[in-house]
Image (spheres, rainbow, N blue to C red):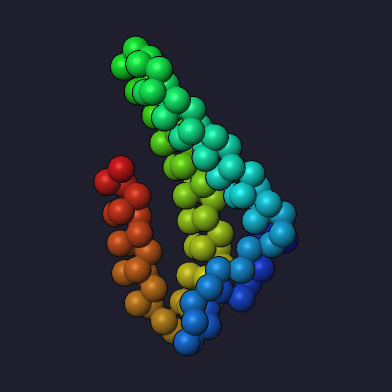
Amino acid sequence: MDENINHDCHLSEERKSHHSDKVKKNLVTRLNRIEGQIRGIKGLIEKDTYCDDVITQISATQSALNSVAKILLEGHLKTCVLERINEGDTEVLDEVLLTIERLMKK
């Protein structure tokens, strides 16, 4: 297993993810970059930038968000989902399938 992932995902009353500091820092850095991309797109629209150029930037931002989602999904599968299955909670599989379905709609 990845040593950078903490394995305390499943709490019966309060569900939280527990990422290592390294993973959390990586995610926050990526999200800060995405936030900057969004501000950049807004600026392009305000400056009446050619539509195709704006769409290209939107596509790059969507790709960056997908990367964040993949990192989160991988960690979720390797820790939270595995832990719940090992506890006999197979309902987590339906939850994961719905999550993947939502991701694939985008």
